[in-house]
Each structure stands twice: as structure tokens, then as C-alpha cells.
Image 1: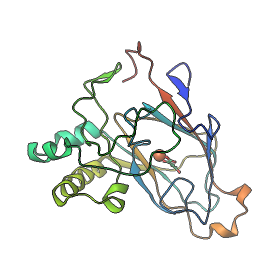
Image 2: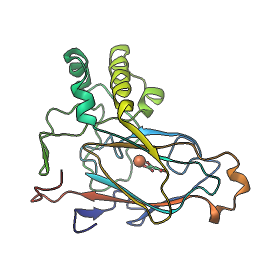
Image 3: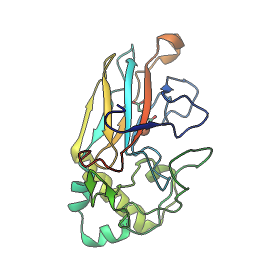
Image 4: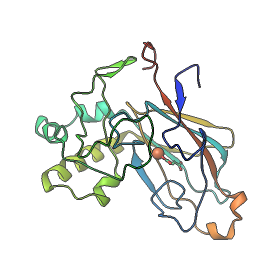
Length: 217
Ligand SMILES: O=C(O)CCC(=O)C(=O)O
Ligand SMILES: [Fe+2]
């Protein structure tokens, strides 16, 4: 991957390849949880989210759940919205999650705009700033009624371009965060009957685009 972009670790406490196992007692909607991990951008509340998030599948869920979800194209979905909705999405009125002990992803962005019109994009995707979206904020963040409604409208457009597929052992998913969002369907019930060492396991690596890279679209 170092040929494509620069691997880095936003989490100083974790190794470069962060493992995502299965913890039956964790918040089911989060990384390593057993439930639906709603579609999102990683590090959505940093001023400089990773350009790419990548997931290497070491072991799929032996019980058959946990398909990966990909949604595209975020900019095409935005273009289908009304100007009024886009104006609301461009306001700094959204927030999600905590920002703690992170490295190389900028400052905490709170509140943030979903459409960041000040973001010039990356060298490979000029004019394509991040669409800072996480479906988790629809459930977990307090938003004004108008901003929540706009975010829901965008979510409805985004799911038009949703696909789900099972990562098999050895499969490697590379997600350009300027064009795609990602998530995970719930794992199959009964995870507590599976020994921890046999449960689904992914390794996650983040990448930063090179400043001189004109081909990373
Ligand atoms: O479990 C998965 O397939 C995805 C996990 C994820 O999106 C994350 O940890 O950021
Ligand atoms: Fe993620």
C-alpha cells in the first residue's frame, strides 16, 4: 500500500495494523461490536481524516454474518439533493463522537459541516472534499430538526448506491474516503458460542495521499 499512499496510525496506542476482532460485550454498533455498524467515514470528526481506510480480512465470521457495506458515490448523492438541503449540510451544525489521543488527523472538528466547501479535495480528487458523514449521528447525536432532516435526506440518497458483500480470508478492501462510505452488517447471532480466537478478524490500516499524487482519484 505504501506504493499508493502513506500508511500511518491515527491511534498511538495501537499498532499500524489495528486489529478489529469481535467483542460480545462491546457497544454492538461500533468497531469490534457484534451489531450493525452503520455506514460512516472513519475519523469523521478530525479536520484531516485519513484519505483511505483499508481492511484486510484475516477470518470472516464463521457463523456467516458481518458482510461489508460500501456506499458510493458520495458526491453524486449530494448532487441529487436540493440547493436548500445542500446549504444546510454545508453549515457547521453536525457532531459525532469523541476525539481523544489521536495522531496526524488534525484537530477536533466540532461542530463540523457535512459538506466542507472550504476543503479543496486531494491532489488526485481536486474539488472533492470529504462528505463528512456518519449514519451514527442520526441516532446518537443531538442535531437541530432542520439539520437532522437534511442529514436524513442525504442518507436516503447514499443508500441508493449501497452494496454488501462478504470479505473472505485474504481479501483486502481499500476505501477512498472522499468517494465512499463504509459499514458492516450485524454478525450472526450466537457469537458467545465461538471461541475468541475463531471469531471474525480484520486488520485495519489508514493511508494519507501523497501531496504530489495526481492519480489517486
Ligand atoms: O467491521 C467492519 O467490517 C468495519 C469496521 C469499521 O468500519 C471500523 O472499525 O471503522
Ligand atoms: Fe470504519
